[in-house]
Length: 506
Image (cartoon, rainbow, N blue to C red; front, side, top):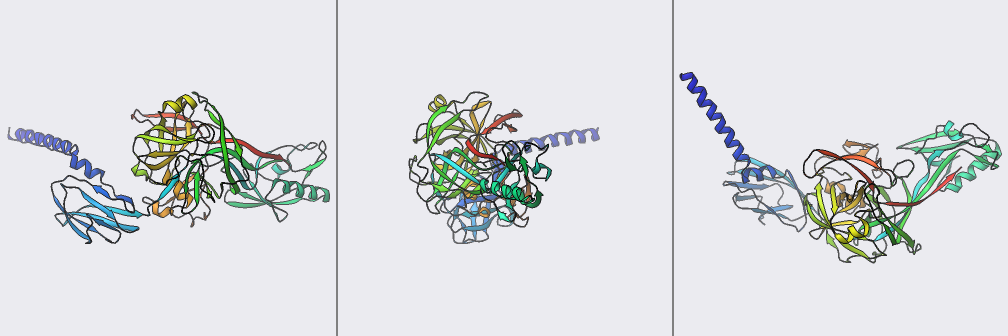
């Protein structure tokens, strides 16, 4: 009987402890303790109030009080009572560590604090024409030469996606230069040494031109392209550094699906002439024209997973505002109301209401950071939601620039993806990537996520992540639904609109 009584008491004691744990985990102090971040990033001049609501005293220890202070104290040790909130005050740009010790002795929490330069940019929304030139002709296909049973280039291991760097030691920049070298070699009856760029490596091949009996010219059996043009949206302009960001996603070749390596390019004025309304299963698009093509707005220096970037010599006109706004870090973005800036008629930038329906928290740069839904009746009536050509439209929340529109869902044109603005600012060079980084360093190499330093991996050039989707090619991806009902398939296309590309057979 005594043994039975002890077992019964142990059982009730165990249930009581479980109940205490459950109730404790539901308490406000416990939830705030679990939500206490291991890292915090602050812009210079922005205070941060921290609440723990715990009935205990503690000592806050700041490893470098020159970087940040607690409650504006100049000391590195500050006495607190955690039942009251305390304020973290950024003082200078840099990094420090905040430690909380209960009763001044028991280690409780540690947090890395990064103070970043205060950044303000002018939000865009203007429709822009994009003319991108590749770093050498890009191979997009092979063809037979009339009178032969094979393509000379395919037999020489020239592959789709290769860039032609040089021929017979002569650097190749223009498509016309390829034809001249081929004709000369054909007339002299000799082969051509071709230097290719294949991924991160270079490859030297040899091929012999073949005589096209029908066209009466020498050919090597290649389709090549060296430019692309389209319509997108300007995201931001930094008046201090005179740089811009646009599109919010990489420009890929429409045939190979590969990111285009930048060899030059420019953005110019564009005017929206009409809208093809988006429908379920059929994304809409902006129809636009280029004008004042000699009046270049800016050049194109980088084409990355987060858009195109370059220098802008003049402040863009026709904007929604000429006043700069603060930017919001990814952890500042909340699910809820926001606005996008975009053009649906002519050059007039207007603000439209959206809902940030779901946030995808990211510890390293990734292209799809949020799911957005258009709620503004005006935009729904005019466009049906997100259409191609809106790519890069700035997302504003609580007066801060927090992201950009990137993709539209094929099965629901009212919704699409957006990217966090901080990744675009990083690629634009507005702020060094190390200042934005959260945790360990990551980079993309050959489509795979790597850990470490990309320069040590031989990747000094801007990282370009290969994407499966192009402007005319739909992709599939799984995305968590906001209501937590498992995972659903979402098909999407980028909201950049390709207009034309220069294609030549040689």
